[in-house]
Amino acid sequence: MRVEVVNTGTELLLGKVVNTHASFFGQELFKLGLRVQRQVTIPDGDDIKTVLNEAFPRCDIILITGGLGPTSDDITREVVAEMLGRELHLDESILEEIENMFRQRGLRASRANDRQAMVPEGAVVLHNPNGTAPGLYLPADEENDTPHLFLLPGPPRELKPMFLDQVYPVLEEMQSEELGRNIWRNFRIYGVGESAIAAKLEKKLSEFDGLEVGYCARLGEVDLRLIGPPEAVDAGSEIVRDAYREEIIAEAEDPIEQIVIELLSERGETVSTAESCTGGLIVSTLTDVSGSSSAVHRGYVTYSNEAKSEILGVPAEVIEEHGAVSESVVRAMAEGCLRVSGADHALAVSGIAGPTGGSEEKPVGTVWVGIASKGMETFAKRYFHPSDRLSFKQRVTRLVLDLLRKRLRGFSLD
Image (cartoon, rainbow, N blue to C red; front, side, top):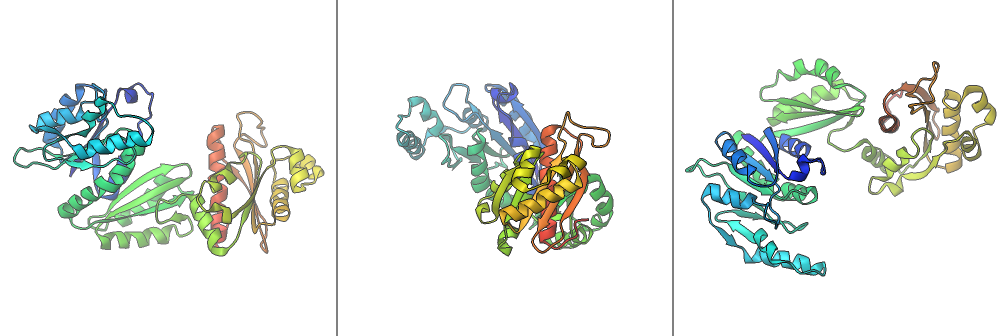
């Protein structure tokens, strides 16, 4: 089925608000085997008429975001009703919901909000517990050759739950009727580039009828998605697992930090961190996970040489002889963190984030990573990630968390 997205909002075109709808719709629709053929962004006002007139003949589904507010330039519902030849009527139950929402905030709804309770004839109302603008679904009309239309509020905090809870199930049923029951599976792979994965797997995966393969690359990771008939996805999945058994973080979209917390919690173990170049980002990332308090013990930011010695017990003469960014120092940091914190595992990093501070021997992007665990040999290794300062910190954070994941799963770190 052919899908297009029409985003309305002058603020999007002015760059005052980042349009996150593109990636959100792309990812969610991919799970259903749907592809967004086109996305357009237009200002508030009459441009929507032209865009929809052009899109109607070529689309099966159109998702329209924004233009459902109470102001005079919010005309999405009026334009759609006019194009479909549908009368608008005031839905008293929606109006009551809007008025109740204002009352709960100690406010009174204005008469301008009545517009948001206007519903085209034959529309299904999509309730909005997070705002005053309900969404609308107008099913396709084969007799008049009009596509399925979903009118959604613009703010992401309103749009996303409405789409996932009320629109996604409708699209899933449509797609099931159209293609039969397809399934999808996501493999999150760390440390292997998109092109390398494609070169290794695409020929083998192409042998399965109906199997589609998609890639989404991010810092140090690639999401490999398989979608198609269950037997094709299952067979393709075995090929992926055989090729990247140790590199697969999860067979889902779970972030690395969540996987690490789950593994630690399953084992009843804890981790502490000793960070220099990442400045606390590792422990911050871990504590972003709900329930991480059972697994994260302590976090030390030992940015200065003095802190490394005073808090972690790294001998000053070792720092003087080898420099803070060295194997000897990061080993001492990891072992000192393990000792003083009492955790089961300790992560340590020391590197040069840049843009200054590098040398010929230790250029910007150099980082030493250390992992110490109770009853195991301390691991230390040098890596090189030349990039801007923020990307460097993010890459190092993901690197060290993946190394801990491998240790917890019994994989080699070398």
